[in-house]
Length: 402
Image 1 (spheres, rainbow, N blue to C red):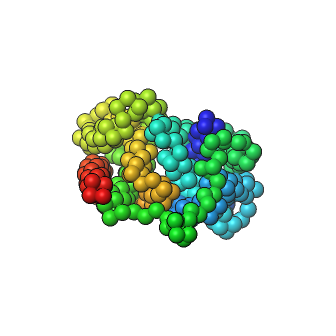
Image 2 (cartoon, rainbow, N blue to C red):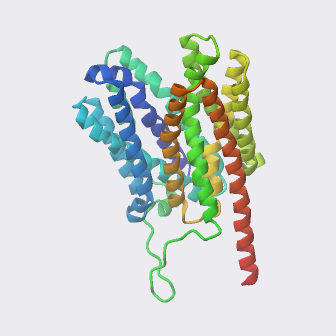
Image 3 (tube, rainbow, N blue to C red):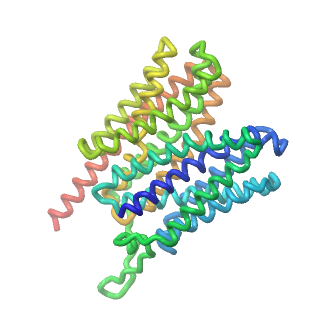
């Protein structure tokens, strides 16, 4: 059991590396290849497209080859891309290779999250948040690792570093035994009904479809807001304060550090108050803290609001996955795949919209746009709980009728 927990956390650590590494070395990369930043942006977009495909295909792959082999496949795809990047092939090869690595990331994140939700019944909330902590550590650590290699003139060795960790993790998945979890990780045999026919795969009931639909919009808005808010913090603060460039850049670090600290703090809290109450607190908390930034009269208050935003948003992704998957046994991979994929779309779309707003209007329009997004998250959170309660009532009535 503990082995599976730690390997799940390591997978999230690698995911944190994978999402940030290209951006960490983008500056020396575009100079080495003599391309513009638009080409660099295309590289990141290709990784996202691969991530989206991998996320959507993950449930099908799990049904075909089982969870453990799927994770091994994901590591092979991700590791191959990092290995190829190390040798600095032509730019066209990089454009082709990046979506392969993105697909590996998408598959691994979907399968590992669904695995935690489906297998760790009582401890799934704290386990998933612990995994998210490792993601944050990876996202914070890889820029420092990349900086070390950049200073030494071998920026491409950043990919070799990640590839080596992937290879080590791959060997652990292949050779370690997971005890009682082994049957869960293997391909599940087709179950025959009493009349000898193959039982159909679990499906969403009519009562749960509204929960899924609202959940899809929630994840679209949440990941979009999570990506928009920190990425444009330096731009926002540059137009609302007199801070220097170093302090502006520090705002992103404050946000991600607060997210990581928030996840660490939530691990013991979630077992005491439950993840439903924590989800409500986090949803209202992020709205309040972003509102404070929008009306902030000083740089000090702005940084406090940034820290509080990271603190409250830290567990929303994982808790949201748990709440929506809660009453959908057997559908964890499919549900997680849909939610993560829509989150990825939001992460691509909303920052683009925010950039357009910044170019065309005053910074206040963008700020209040982010506040509006955070308000939508609270409304959608309420919708999720409302329709979950309705679905539970319908199930109870059906049981009483039978």
